[in-house]
Length: 288
Image (tube, rainbow, N blue to C red; front, side, top):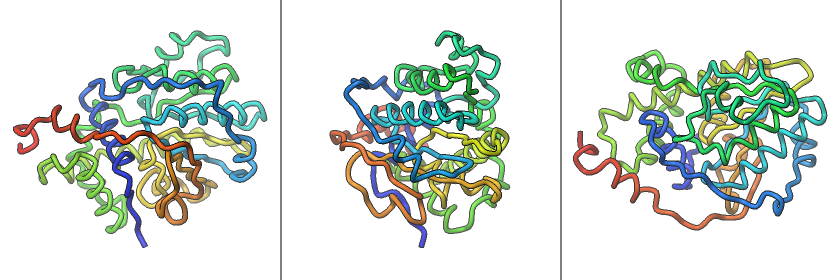
């Protein structure tokens, strides 16, 4: 049975990230976290999840501890010599640190990836990126470039990339993720962008796959969903584990048909993301 996200925070975080990618706006603020106070069980998790060719880490974008856990997992895999590449939703495909030395500066890494800090704060994701760079492992931009998103909106073939129930679920997530502010005429085009992004991320991951090593993809949770996201577009020959990083208690969507495992972190304070989105779009834009 197809499941969808029940957490408004996860839906809205993914939607805000999409709007940021389309409009270049600073919707995501740089989180702060005392990383030295956070201890995770990365080695234990790897023992649970491996062997695998691909690990999809589906985060909650506004949960700073998730980026800390990603960094620790990347560092643990690199220390084992098992990290083939780190792919990031937060950078466009084509960007790569493959040509950089292990002692490259953060500015060089940002430049190589074409990092757009107004959409994705470097303070949050820089440590994840640099953990791979310092280990001599390439970091790859995996997202569909913004310049190609408009064409994707008109590409009817993308409607065929998901089974019917999954396509309807994606469309519903687009509605809910935009706080029911989008006109119905925009639901299908925006869903096509979401699918096109998943396809591009899958292509990036598949091209980076190496026998005996692991490609890690960092993305929002919806992209990591086995029924709706990147796994739908990966070759069946790859061993894929979809991991949901979730702030707060587990729920019915955390495992089973949607994810292979859930990695819980402390709950975050409730935030009304819709209030800010409504203010940004305004009633006039919402009705267009």
